Length: 446
Image (cartoon, rainbow, N blue to C red; front, side, top):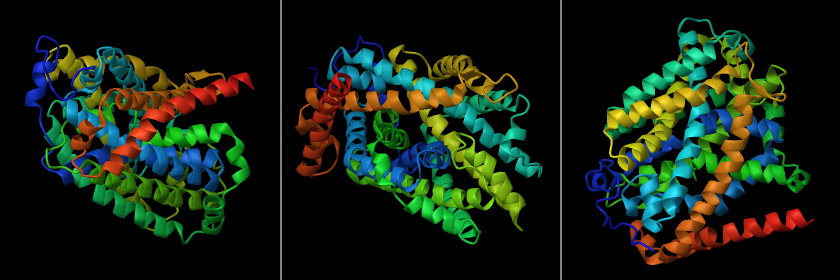
């Protein structure tokens, strides 16, 4: 095993770039930037539609258990690993073991796939933001009549590429503006939702837990998958952002703040959307277009609907866009450092890859209607890559670190003096992969 954190092989591509890496200006800057990466479509778009599909309160409780027991320790681990290695995702895994190069590229590939359709949904938010300025907000069925999804996907990809050319400081500045304003606006919409006729029905839906649903393994798979998705576990985000953490930062504290922030915003998103869903007699099981089918009706019926629509969809776009930039940063960092390319060339290569892979998802909600069976291609890809595959990546990536890296090295990387925290991380990281393998074997035999 190589000594993680010590870059010794100068002939290996990418290692000479590590020592000159930028850093977040402070721990709060890291918190804002990481929160902006985590609090995006995963909370405002994906979480509500999964709550709608999986029965409300029962899913929410399963999701919260997944966050507390499993997801937070793995988040600490990935950020600390990035801080130790001071490099991109591939570099970090390779520092643990030479075979880790392949696993690192696997993680980057997952991020490529997820970002390819994430850019499409971000395009929807851009379209709704521009439509609200023109006072032409439409429900999703009308919005997706033409090829808007494709054109907006291309626009978002170009904008993200331009921002990435400016580096970490641009991401940090955007994040500091985004988070407080977005939170205030969401709380305002929750207050407005509390005055609707559907509030009581939404309260019952979100607070009532049907524990019989817990017997369905699919619910737990989706709940854990959403936890991994929300905190960006197993996707290279945490490792990459962790590599920019300043020396004096307290990693567990910073990660806990991010985790609490993203959880609160996810729950608020549910309380913001579902009262309007029931008020307007909509189906909560609509899938990926739930927010885009509901919110246009909401703003259309409000006295101050137009300015609220402009503010909300504008910030919705910025939240989604910041998450896209985080995903692209993972890919760009790996390509630039591993192949010793300039940031500009790495951004161009990344944009080209995403252009090719994102088009099928963009065509899912156009007259082409690209689908797998009865499921739009984008939804099908989200269910696989955004749930099942990142679960595998996060769980076995944690095992890779915890079985091969000595606890004392992680202890110092965390910036904390809590041996209990390290023991908790290593207990989860080492034995969760074993438990999953045993569960799969038993399920197969039965």
